[in-house]
Amino acid sequence: GGWRRAPQHLRSAAAGWDLRGGARAPGEKVLFWPCFLCASSSEFSADLGRATSEIMCSRQASVLGWCFLLLHMAHGVTGGLPCIRKYFGRDSIVCVCNSTYCDTHDPVSLPPVGSFIKYESSKSGNRLAPSRGVFQDRTVTPDLVLVLETTEQYQTVKGFGGSVTDAACINILSLTPATQNNLLRSYFSEDGIEYNMIRTPIGSCDFSTRTYSYADWPDDYELKNFSLVEEDIKMKIPVMQRVKAMSKKPIYLFASPWTSPIWMKTNNNWKGKGSLKGKAGSKVHKTWANYFIKFLDEYAKHNLTFWAITAENEPTAGLLTDYPIQCLGFTPERQRDFIALDLGPALANSSHKDIRLIILDDNRVHLPRWAKVVLSEDSQARRYIHGIGIHWYLDLIAPINDTVTPTHQFFPDYFLLLTEASAGFQFWEVSVVLGSWDRGNHYSQSILANLNHNVIGWVDWNLALDLEGGPNWVKKYVDSPIIVDVASDTFYKQPMFYHMAHFSKFIPEGSRRIGVSIVQRYGSCHLEYVALIRPDGAAVVVVLNRTGKTIPFGLSDKMGLIVTEIPPNSIQTYLWKRE
Image 1 (spheres, one colour):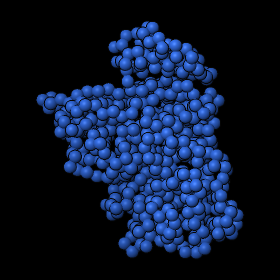
Image 2 (image 1 turned 180 degrees about the vertical axis):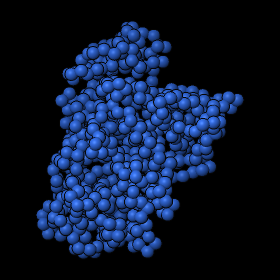
Image 3 (image 1 turned 120 degrees about the horizontal axis):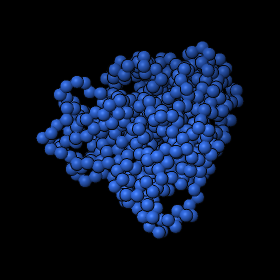
Image 4 (image 1 turned 90 degrees about the horizontal axis):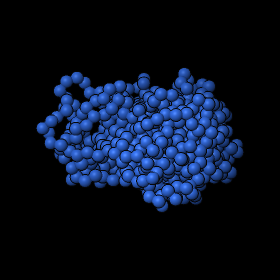
């Protein structure tokens, strides 16, 4: 029915499309919506994306996708191309993309004054599903109301993003060009989730296939042999250039070193307990500081300039005996002195003097002490520093109110940025769990908590990994929002991807967090939420429900009252004009 209703020119065009599929894995289930079951406009509009039948079949994602596209056009439904679902167990849903089809999400368009738009993703299968509504008067008030307090203003958001590692590039570039483009557009384009931040390693890291630096010639204190390697020239640089070309927003790059060349280290090894030889101000420390400048210079030749660098990735790792991956140890005192005597002056005297310098770049358990040492009133390093980077790996033993909150109170002029997070990192966990809603919940829970404690952004780890969670030279695999299946030229968008989208697509750079108060008749609030005012003056509210029940609630603003509800295991983003 939907096919017959499609205009003739669309049916003719579809006949010429390359409908590319892939082999079905043993026992694999694919959700299929036969076009004839979507015959009526009302049925299609109301229930697009919900299963009408589940059958065993070969995966022809493109065929299904173009079926939906034709129905979209025929019935005037908007919101982008829908997700082609693939199940890896009950409620474990990924969205399948290949060279000819990938779900998309229309650019944000604010509804008229007096109305709002809501986007919803859920464990049951919604993926940024849009719907509209209107404000009501306050004659009927839900038992739970979130009230926007616009006079309470907090931090300004910088953005959201992920990391361009060697492993991410290997996976992205292993796909055909059209599929690569769909993957990168999914993250960075206006019809994707509009990331605006990228972190990249300076040299090798654990998510490389080998260990290397850019100056592996002993005693080359002048760095005469400094040079980028194939991983930069053929992988990371081209990927970042493509991202910048396709994004309509500025892309903010920042870089972090895992280790110096081993001839500069006390243990002469990539991994394990080891620090820079000598003391701050010594020949080795000066050379290591100049190494940063050389890196920035070389990338600038490829038209890639950096917004920030971090002084060291996880500097406490290099203080641990037998640490298994690349590292370089610093105590807070040694990092303070290195910045004061070497790295800070090197940056200030270079063409990169406007770059932001971020300290810590490690788990928040080290706060506030790390900041107190490096940013103390008598510290000569503080004048070169702009922000503090945190990772999420030890959050369970480091409550945010004991770490991030006092750090912001002590040092309000230095921004806080979450610079790395990944799921599946614990030794007892399965690295990749396809379709895990719980891991998406973990992302949103962390983002909400950090935004509500003055953090200006949240940057994920690898943009894409393989089905194993690699490659990784020490086989320390983790999960990723996008998993690549090279054999079928396919990639899977996981729930983590869509949880990220509820923030990255709707909270642009320059948004200002505001206060929220709760009006509640009884019980306790089981929702997690954040509210902001965007640069265009619109309000944006993200609400997370990690419980197994539907929760009715209201959103109150000067425009009136939104009476709504959030289903079990769901996340919603609300947007509206305020004038």
